[in-house]
Length: 428
Ligand code: URA
Image (cartoon, rainbow, N blue to C red):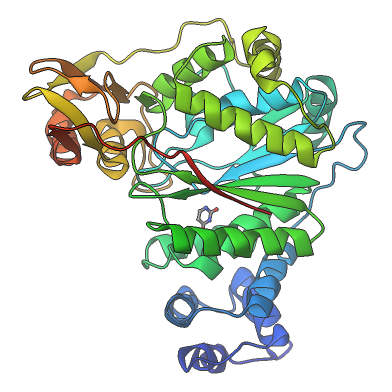
């Protein structure tokens, strides 16, 4: 066996002592970790040193490139249409990908979305779509190209070959409390998006209790870091910074979120979902060279719904089949009159997760029907005894634990709160 070029202990010490890793050190450690030559305990120590001491822009760029180089890259250059994609840093009730892909593809642009499953309190797009009878997340590359050419939008599981270093690293970060580090999040997300081969990318960076980034300054820093990484790699990248202090829309949970997405595609649905879907769609289309698209009209006149039906059917799903419904429900009622001044995203997200909508370990199954349906949202006037939300689950013994999370996240006050700002900033 050829000798290793570096010693992991030296690399860890460099970062532990606040130094800058060389390109050669980064290339080596990512490669050696992927090959299993550097162990989890050493990588965990390095992650913690990065978490505590940060990385320079040059280090983040090289770390990202090394993760891209750990696996295969895709290319959509042979398609007859431009490609554009969106990535959200994850939130509660964030089902925007579902109406967004079909909406954008209705304008003749291809949307190849390689997605993941939910971990912790934020839901995963694949888990949501799997609530649709027959729908399959695994799509071989040649079939993906064909669907993109024919119907324009695909949501598929990212193959094991795409940025394998990130897959190992992300699992390790998840169990060592090193997820919420800007260099590590930015390189993780952007390595996958750059390897995926999209020409244009809009990032939805969430800020608030239900997001990784709890305040605007750190959300801006994450957005700026990711936009720079994308731009430097030749991907036309922009970011929106959007609110995640309270859930998006009125449905949280897999099947419930599909139901709400279909309402939006049918020209209805909650105002915040419509606003964010349309803003992201306009940006994705703009980056792909389609300017001033009337995306609201495409939601109203059925074009986006036609694309949705094609997208679901192309992956084996039946878009007209009834969605599964939970056998057990529990209503939460308002304790007194007033205004809903707080409906905390994290409390609701954890509640939905405890009902069975999410998983604690990546191999756990999820319940398609578990989740929370909101009957009142932030700022609404409510009266004593009114239904605020309905909890759904297949396993009613979960209600108590879910309520322990949800109830402290609800505040009813005497005066209406300030109107919510959904889109805080735009970074390009
Ligand atoms: N999503 C990712 O893919 N990686 C992170 O580090 C955080 C969110």
